[in-house]
Amino acid sequence: MYDYLIVGAGLYGAIFAYEANKREKKVLVIDKRDHIGGNLYTKNIENINVHMYGAHIFHTSSIKVWDYLNNFTKFNNYINSPIANYKGEIYNLPFNMNTFSKIWDISRPEEAKEIINKQRKLLYKENPSNLEEQAINLIGTDIYEKLVKGYTEKQWGKKTTDLPPFIIKRLPVRFTYNNNYFNDIYQGIPIGGYTRIFDKLLKGIDVKLKINYFDNREQLDSIARKILYTGPIDEFYNYKYGPLEYRSIKFEHEVLDTDNYQGNAVVNYTDIDTPYTRIIEHKHFEFLENEKTIITKEYPKNWKRGEEPYYPINDEINNNKYQKYSVLANQETKYLFGGRLAEYKYYDMHVIVEKVFELVNKEL
Image 1 (cartoon, rainbow, N blue to C red):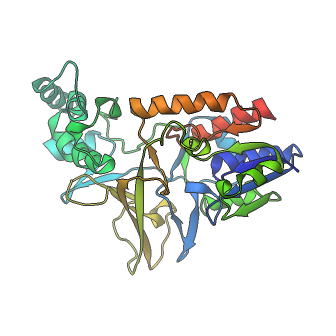
Image 2 (tube, rainbow, N blue to C red):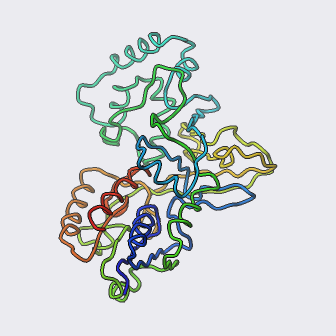
Image 3 (cartoon, rainbow, N blue to C red):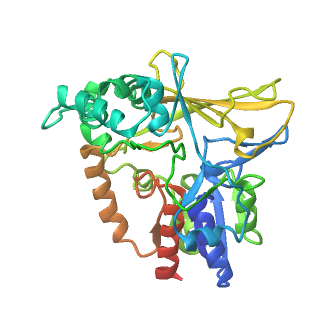
């Protein structure tokens, strides 16, 4: 008998497994994939650590979270400074004075504020009925047309006029020449890739891969006192209230015979005609000097059951369904639930760590 069966070898499951094992609990971790690490999995190809499921840049302002993860790895000083490519025009992200200077040939914050406010007032809607109206309310027409509209329509697979306004509650606008995407105190990429963290978290713990929990649920449940489930909560309850909706992504990895393809780790393609939303060039995360490079193109796509879910569609219909599933989950005594799929929320990595701390304090 195990004290805990943990379904899912991602960040939530792996940290809880480590903490339980440290307290001399007997733990079994299973995952349906053929590797540990969940979406944080990095694979070394051509001496480059490739983020196989999209770019992950760790950032936090919590010294507790930062110190905790530094027990398992050391982080470099990578600063996330993505750029946008709009039909060959290059702009800095998040929207800042470098962006505004390039678009409007200006240099001072008050000039940028004046232009943005003028554009906002021209088409301002007191109660925006869609995402387009909401975005223009926030940042005006020029930035919206070049840097928001096309990217958003690709990301969600719908016209911005057909998307609800709540998707964009705010847009990061800075009137400084600072290209750092995050405001957190601590930021970086694990030296040697994310998978090393999971190797250390799960050391000495029973791990079985390519095991689908639902293929043999009754038998797996019988070998553990408690189960921590980190998968989709609607699947756990056999879609009793209907499936929760997601957006998915197709990743295309390419090895190229050049030492530098795009000059930056992250380049967003914000026009509607380019089919992918961004290209990741992985070597720039770790400042590597190789003769080759590896890029990943990300193509957003509609999600259907059986495919990997990435971004929850937290509209009113789906959130109401989730609340029903959450009521069932809160009534369980043998089962624990946690993580982005079980909680139907898109969490940054540091939030996941904090969430596991909460469960550890409560459960262990």
